[in-house]
Image (tube, rainbow, N blue to C red; front, side):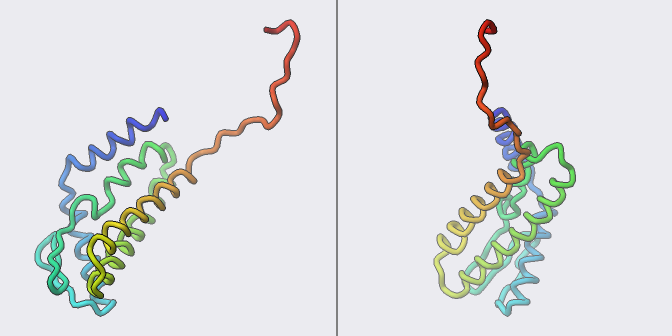
Length: 150
């Protein structure tokens, strides 16, 4: 529980910056992957793309950098875990976005293909972070009462 304020600060830090380069990279990767899937996607700008009838801007949360920054206090001090987590998060996020765009193109409502999918993915990431937490090893034996040592 003592790390919760650091998690909040990490998320607030993430939202205090624009992350333009990461947003542009995410947009470009989404356009490339959508094109590989045969979706009629076009890039409108550095951080925006469009499917027919659906202009989309890649925001900060679309990169999941807020999730990463919030997870840093929970995964610290393991540098290897941070790098693995960041790489896994990039891949998972692209699958989430492109999968949502695929559903959107096929007529699924934005609330389902983006918002609900995002909620499920964020829950899975939370589960992932919790499972990576170092375990506290405690004895399974009950404490014994020793007379005279109260």
